[in-house]
Length: 305
Image 1 (cartoon, rainbow, N blue to C red):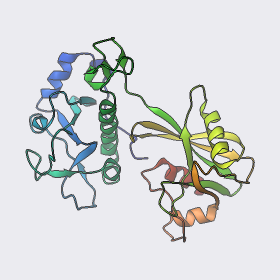
Image 2 (tube, rainbow, N blue to C red):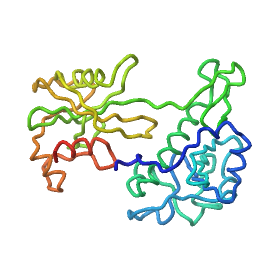
Image 3 (cartoon, helix red, strand yellow):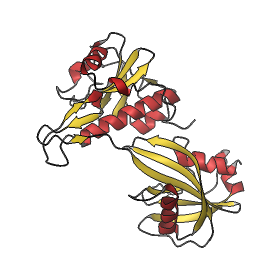
Image 4 (tube, one colour):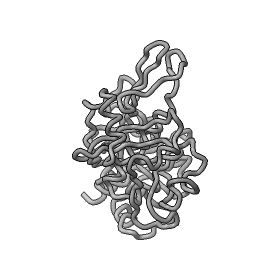
C-alpha cells in the first residue's frame, strides 16, 4: 500500500453535526487524542531513533492544557466505538521539553513520521495534519474577512458576520509517467536535490478532466504530445492537502522541450536502468523518489510490468 492510504477509521460524518455527541466523545475516557504541534505529530520514543515509530495517542485530560482556548480539535473518526481526535497545541512553546508530554516522546516532521509509522497510523496522521493545516489557514472568512468559528467536529467553519460557510478543500493533482516504448519520462524540479528525478505533476485546473490535465502538463513542462491516458491509483497528500491522481500517458513524441520555469531538467530512462535503481544498485547521478511518494509506485509499476 501507498503511505497515507488505507485509513482504518470510520469518519462517521453523520455524527459531526451533533455537538453534544462530539463533546461527549471528546471527554470519553476511551477516546484517543493526537497532539499536533506546528503541524508535527507526536511520536512515542526517542527522537534520535530511525526505527519503526508509534503514534502518540493520549486519553483525554493529558494534553488539553497545552492548547489555546480556541485551538482546533478535529474529530477524525471511530474505530469500533473508540473515537480519535487531533488537537492543535501549536500555542505551547515546546510541549515535548516541558509539561505533561515531557519525556514521553517527541514531535517529528510529518513526512519523516510517515516513513516510520505503520501504514494505518500514517493515514490517520495524514488526515490530522491536513485538517489542522486547513484550520490554521482558514481562520478568517474569504468573503468578508471576519474571524470564523469551527463546527461539525472541525469539518466546517462558519462566519458569524455574513453567515458564509467554509469547508475543507482537497486540491486534485495529476502525477503522470509518460512512456515511449521501453523508456519513461522523468523530470527534476528546481527544488529537487541534485540527481533526483520524479514523475511530472501539476494541479488540475477548473473545467479540466484528468486526461486533459495530464496532456496539458506534459506538453507545458516537457513539450511532448501524448495519446492514451490511463489511471493507476491515487494518494492523499497532506502537504498541505492534495489528492495525487496517478496516471500513465502514452507519449507520441520523444523530443523534449523543457520549460525552464517548471523543471531544471527532464530525461528519458530505459526500463533496465529504472529496475537497477529500484533494486538498490547505484547509478551515478540518478536517484528516484522514496516509497512515501506515489511517483515511486508509478515508476515501479511500469518498470516491473
